[in-house]
Image 1 (tube, rainbow, N blue to C red):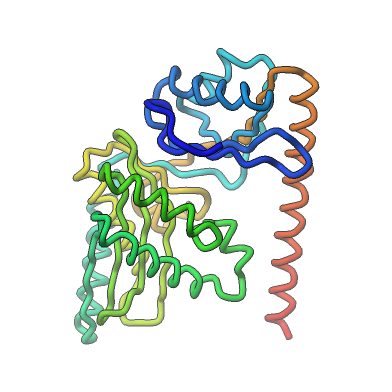
Image 2 (cartoon, helix red, strand yellow):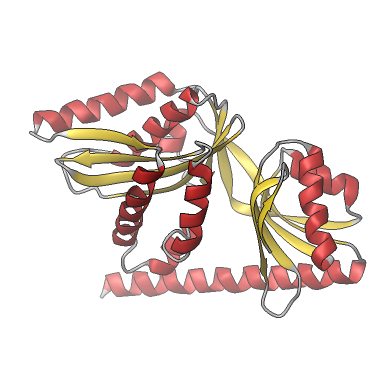
Length: 298
């Protein structure tokens, strides 16, 4: 089931798991309160009786809604964790100084650097196509790994619908960084209420500009603050101190895969399915990493 439910969520997608009628729920929340979250969870359970909610934050309305409305539920902590930063970020000025230095350094080498933010419908779709092209190049030869980080390349048509819908309400941005008219970094971001989402980034690091991805992230942070956002979710992993998330002062946000059901039997069935699916994906990822390492050693 896909579509809009007034006041509850902007876009919902229930994707049936193979061999089970229970869905995976992926949704943009329209309101950050327990009532809205409970309505979405109960809507899914009314359709199927059981649902897997992936990567639910440890804080927020979703877990609270499950605790008050669902009897049969369980949660498995996801690794790596997510990262959240308050706006303005604690280390904003230091991060800004490093970005400005990178731009000055590239300029001394003769490079012309431009940072552009796309928000209008007519600008967003061409910018999204450029982002997808850059993302394909960034993960060429490692497509499976890239698709685990973001599905923009394999679900392009769905994103085109989402982007157009959210662009009409002014809640989507694409920030692009150009070096001598060549795209070297692009970031896709969304907003909802006072929250912002750092969704997908892609970079090309062969020119004079150091850390183009850091510059694009900082530009999206500045844009989100202009839009009145007070917090930004930066995604999972890569939280090392000298990385772009660490430079902003982001903090770790625990995430959980949650199984909820109306009955004990449906809960057990979906929980086993989720555990097996997680084990299979992990084995595939390890096998792929081993194969790539073996190929590099030859």
